[in-house]
Length: 131
Length: 131
DNA sequence: TATGAACCTTCCAGCAACTGTAAGGTCAAG
DNA sequence: CTTGACCTTACAGTTGCTGGAAGGTTCATA
Image (tube, rainbow over all chains, first blue to last red; front, side):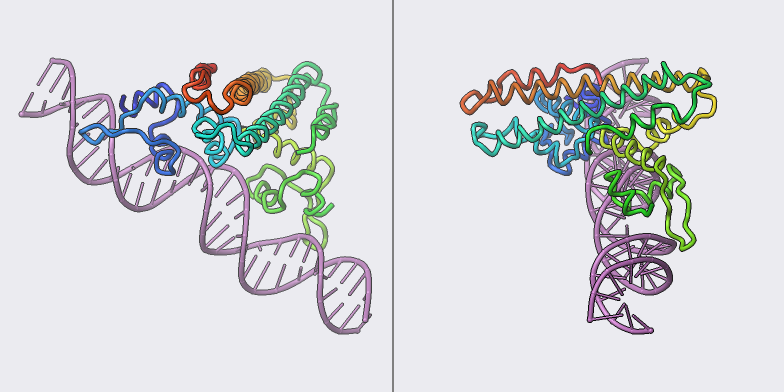
């Protein structure tokens, strides 16, 4: 499929998809006319990249995450350890988002209008797990 | 307190803290010697910024989030609506992280060594909520 | 009191990860 | 056979930092 379809299916702009190719994250085929030709597997990776990037993983971290799927020796301790590290990072992010959510929700429900800073929000803000 | 202390307490590099001042996210006092002087409230905001940025919110989104605390008319519908929008974004991010976590966990537990692509991982990857 | 380490200041350059624009080739429909 | 929506590369601009130079401040110690 053409880059436009890959863009629609992955949610990433064509520009970004070409950029990801430039930096070696994906390697689509080329059709006879020179157009990039994306397989379903490429789209899977693009969707994955979109998700991981929007969640605050750097491109290099995404490269590592992608490697976890592509690694030919998945049983190796290295790969398993990397996966564990990434799992811990994800858990940390989930905790921080949950905290952020509590903070905003508290703001909506408890601090409407009259109650102003310093409502308990800013105290809450300062508590979250160590960054 | 000086920028170094604010850096230690917020987890942000001094460089980044000065940058956030340049773009108007925070406005610390100045001491007589010209040094920036951070109050506890500034540190709260910096910690908040650190967290929100690492979770994939853009600087402009962080500016909006910060405004939710500072807005003088917090009861206004606009502010409430913005908060709701941000809550929905946070929920979406939590869902995506949870999905990502399942994917990696599945990889560790079910796809060790011999089972290789195309194990169910890539199918799972393609399913997550629409981005 | 002076010298040096460890702070702080501004300014400017560079990097990461896109994003926009220009100039042009391809293709399906009318 | 042309119009419009695709696609291509190349290069410039933006965002969000990040590093380095050149210099001022503060404080402990000699």
